[in-house]
Length: 339
Ligand SMILES: NC(=O)c1ccc[n+]([C@@H]2O[C@H](COP(=O)([O-])OP(=O)(O)OC[C@H]3O[C@@H](n4cnc5c(N)ncnc54)[C@H](O)[C@@H]3O)[C@@H](O)[C@H]2O)c1
Image 1 (cartoon, protein in one colour):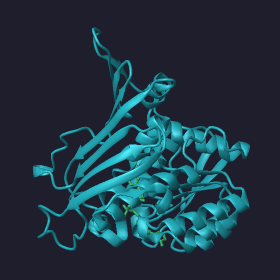
Image 2 (cartoon, helix red, strand yellow):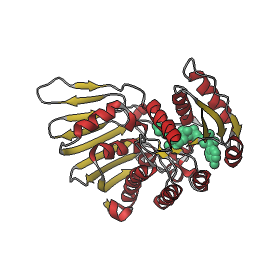
Image 3 (cartoon, rainbow, N blue to C red):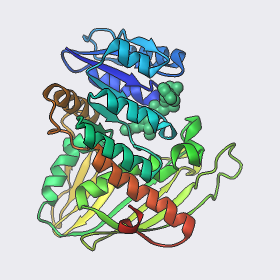
Image 4 (cartoon, rainbow, N blue to C red):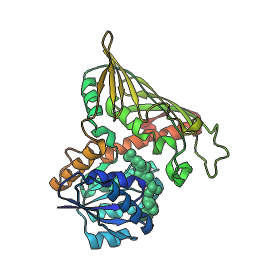
């Protein structure tokens, strides 16, 4: 039996728990959350949505994660906290010495993220970051199709409404739209097209001046250059009228030599001249495949099978933080100087 714990048991943890309910010989033994009533509620929601014939989740709930680690002694931990909470807690969980899945974004500060990455390396623990889309076969197949192709350009645009999560609209708590949310698309761009070398962002608050507590940009327009020389475009808004999701979230278009790929975790479409568009659908849910890979890595003690490590997530964080810095400074930034 693999005994799993969570630190932070809010909205995102429900999805992880549902995914884990599809795996055999896995027990969620403990949840640590400052708000224990919220953790109870999350456990209830996950129980209502877990795989029908899986055993109920009956985790012990703790307010103090250190006590949880001592008493529950889990085999691995999911860290599913608001982005601004990272710091001492990450170091404590690494010192505990067992595998950790860190939700994205892995920090809000590049120096802190580097420190955490160094600590992980020193301790040699199995580690993963919550970029589940990499695990979808609707992403894996186009990635394989792109091998050996020259990339012309990559584009990702997301237009949607403001999430209800209270910390999301506060710059110092979420890092803003690109760092917290569009990070998935930036990560997919890196995964499919290689490293990003420089960014130039223009951003503004156009429609959200009267939204209480909001101090993030609600419009971002970024051009990037990949190390290959290919250009890329990233655009996003959390203030689209009526919260319309005009583009599927985290859709990435890749213009390659022989085809255009519109890549999304739930459906990829391949466009080729003179041919009907080809659809690639995922064989399994990305969250399920990620949970399986993390549990298998916990059991084997080996990093193979993890498609997004902390070190890799650090690079995606770097790109999104550099975009924020570029928008504030009104100047392009190279990743070499930023990192
Ligand atoms: N991979 C994805 O698709 C995806 C989707 C949604 C959210 N996320 C990420 O998951 C993380 C959590 O998001 P969420 O939507 O669940 O947030 P949330 O606000 O719903 O839940 C966070 C929980 O953490 C608890 N918490 C806060 N500080 C704590 C501390 N010091 N110790 C213990 N518990 C603490 C809160 O009480 C809350 O219950 C964020 O990093 C977010 O970016 C990822």
